[in-house]
Amino acid sequence: MTEAPTRRERLRTATLGEIRQVARQLVVTGGPAAISLRAIARELGMSAPALYRYFPNLEALVMAVCSDVYDELHEAVTRAGDAADGAAPKLLAMAHAFRAWSVAHPAEFALLFGSPVPGVVELEEGCESPEHPAARVGAAFLAPFAEVWRQLAPPPVPEDPQLTKALAIHGDVLGPDGMY
Image 1 (tube, rainbow, N blue to C red):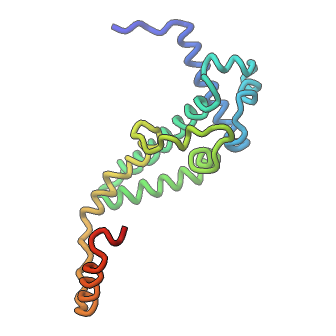
Image 2: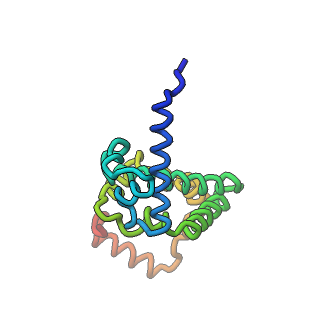
Image 3: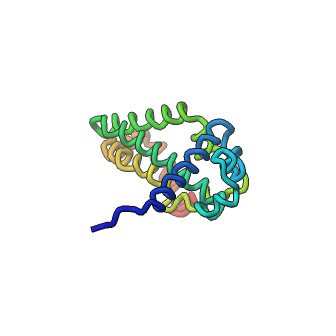
């Protein structure tokens, strides 16, 4: 049986959420470059050094906000995909949801996919890691894309004898590694 969180833990959790919310609001009103510990602290009525009790640095705070935004985007994309039947309609619905979310949230889109936040390099590092928040959004597209790809017929083999001969000669001259 787990214990209920203490009052201090509840207040800390609420403050963490409020810090993230204020940081996101700064992104919405001023763009990604508007995020700073000083600006967040000013909005919350606390000192900038007090924020270090909740986040070790600006990068960690920006990553937390980005994680929240990626989760929201992932939810929008998967909800749209779940409402569609069939792989191609699902993929199309997800792509439309991604675009609709991006148009409705231009500042958040800029935070995730635009110019980097000054002084924050962690956003782009590790994007290929499955643990990175961006990976969940990309992974949501993998299964429907793979299914659409699987359902497609392979392209027809050229019937032109001259083209077939030219391709064979080309392959013989270059070899299997010649194209790379």
